[in-house]
Amino acid sequence: MKIFKIAALSAVFAAQFAFAQFKQTPLPYAYNALEGNIDAQTMEIHYSKHAAAYVANLNKAIAGTPQEKQTLFEILSKAGTLPMAVRNNAGGHYNHELFWTVLTPQKNTQPSAKLTKAITDAFGSMDAFKEKMSKAGADRFGSGWAWLSVDKSGKLFVSSTPNQDNPLMDVVEEKGTPIFGIDVWEHAYYLKYQNKRADYLTAIWNVTNWKEISRRYEEALSKK
Image (cartoon, rainbow, N blue to C red; front, side):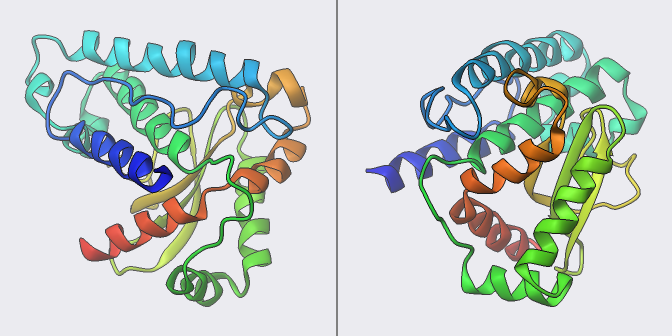
């Protein structure tokens, strides 16, 4: 049943890139499902207020423009040529739709053997990768994201972007297909962790959905 639900949600997520107007995908777990690591109040405000606003403002920003008939991927690929309202809200929508799926209440999920090998090849070990990913989030000044992505040659890399930018955009230095992202905007953690971003970045590994990240990795490779 859980596998069917995740598959259905992934299909809904993918379908959003086929046409506008854009909509939020239902959260794949209850607001309190990640308690102990991400509190229910944070999840509810984050999903129903912040993320919902990105969708509403994106639809408003593209109304009556050529982007109204474009996919989200098309919009992101030309973000640098578009008004900031489009760039920021398109990024915010994509980033959060990914973020919800790479978190899970399921305990101790593990990356696939193929992804584990790719991580070891790229970073030396899983622990070294986690340290690099957490550092990318911790060192991001102000608001932004830390990413694990697949580059055009199929190799993994860690990067960080400001605000709601992401590696799919033409404006970033390190381009690729994101398969895992950590939101380090204060609204993602401040109610529980206050100014302790490092504690939030440690806790996120307890709710990381390695099954979904592995699926995204395979999907990214298939498009190379």
